[in-house]
Amino acid sequence: MKGLQGKTVLVTGGGGAIGGAICRRFAEEGAKLRVCDKAREDAEAVAKEVKGRAFVFDIADYQAANRALGDVGVDVLVN
View 1: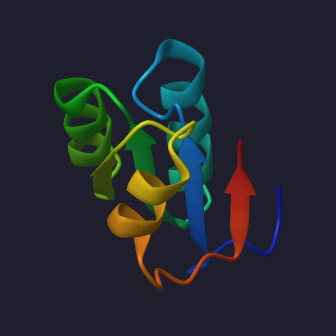
View 2: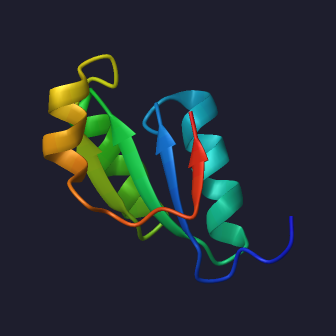
View 3: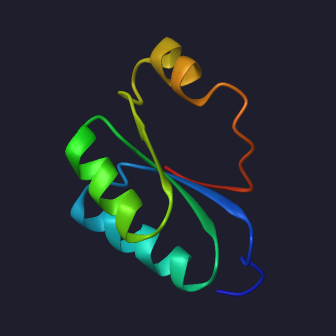
């Protein structure tokens, strides 16, 4: 992966095993991570590890996602 330094990457399900691995890989490239998951502890743990920011909501709930993310700028979405 190239060209990700400083880019904002939002990963839904980022607190899980696969999502967490994706977050770690993007972090290795210098991306700024937005770790989204409905499990608060998992999202916060991964966000802390990758020096990112945790967002807690159920991606299936559009209104909850909109409230949680607001106008967060995103360059890359992993969904």
